[in-house]
Length: 222
Image 1 (tube, rainbow, N blue to C red):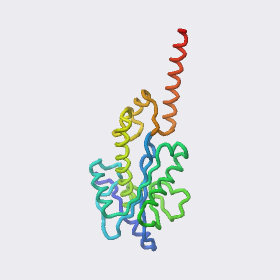
Image 2 (tube, rainbow, N blue to C red):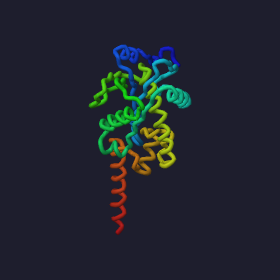
Image 3 (tube, rainbow, N blue to C red):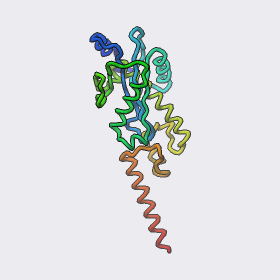
Image 4 (cartoon, rainbow, N blue to C red):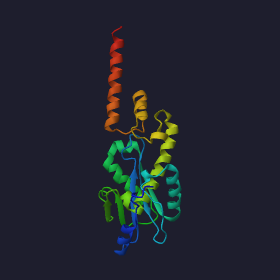
């Protein structure tokens, strides 16, 4: 790791504990920008009496290190997961899906959180006090832990979906719009696990346009 890399600290957790909050939970999500598969959120309450070292933003870690850290986190921390599938994202939209994923993750904790530390933007309509931290997964230990739990959980889901939908190479691209994924979409079209995002709609329209041209061309021979 670079010496300049910011290490997530527990100063936010300590500060809000000093104000009387007991169950301070870090929340993060993964899969927001993916073209296929679910959004996954994780909520993590780190132990007060045991320090977890080497926590980082999950994106900065190798898959192997993420898995190792996820196991350590699960052993000592309270963790909750929230999953919103692509079909639901297409129905209710991204913003509402994110709120739903966060709510599910918090509800799936064995403890009741009384303060939330969240990466990025605040959770909409939450009755629990919260603090939104820009790039929180790089600054706040419990958010970094949540990013690791969410990432490892979703990656496992995407590997499973990759076996069910091998054409799209989801085990490699995790549903994101890589060149390989775009090529597969142009060749095979979108599946039921793809989201109704603008790039997908564009590809669908191009496929429809191409099929229409072929149909018109074929009809000229009759």
